[in-house]
Image (cartoon, rainbow, N blue to C red; front, top):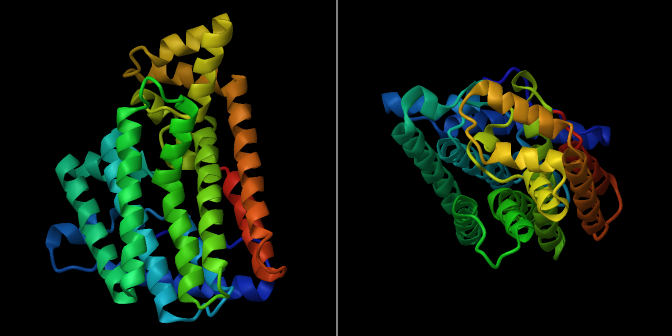
Length: 335
């Protein structure tokens, strides 16, 4: 099991206590949800769950549900549903990205091979689908739409932008599908299933879309700016696999527009052979010192501000304050 439960943002004491209590229940139910008599799946399905995690998506379900009745059974099911879906996507992502580690532990495909990792992700998706069916038809519909977007986001990231497509717009659309869609689902289900006032689910869906993009932009910074011991991931792994990130897109644009030597050198390294750790480490160091990293950090902060503006449509009070703090914690994190 993880060494500790996720840290609840510094918010109203009564609300924080209630959210923490429900997170503990969700943690237990996550393990129950993947229980199986199959000897192999029993271990593979729990691998990333046991490695821990921030449980960002369940926390957003609970914060949104605090605008209604957080104690409803369907709210707890929704929180487990979104985290299972997220975990399932990680098994697939690590195969696609050839990531050697995840959350400080060996990735599933490193331990058992690509086929086992992919099938384990499918197993978790199946369990998540069972939960959506338990909640009801609307949850099935919303979950299936989100699952579709997760797949399309990965597909579009893999294929890349077309010749007539702006690479920055393409990248933001990938972030919206791969990351923001599930946060949007978390916010929408939390509000919808808790019986929050009419229209709250729409506000939380739009908020989730915006904060999800900010969250992933902050992750782009972490991918370069932190070490494996802090983030649980190998720094620069996206570079090795040729996966675009906002910092690399900014450097490429600068190199094309200005032709300055430093930018051109970074682009040459990005397009070169990065299989050796020493070569990758040198590139990571260059990007850490490049202005693109700070530009990405600023873009993440501006996007978070836009998410907070959407929260302004909610009634003033402890829940809105908590969601605002939640937003800041996502973009200012160090892991």
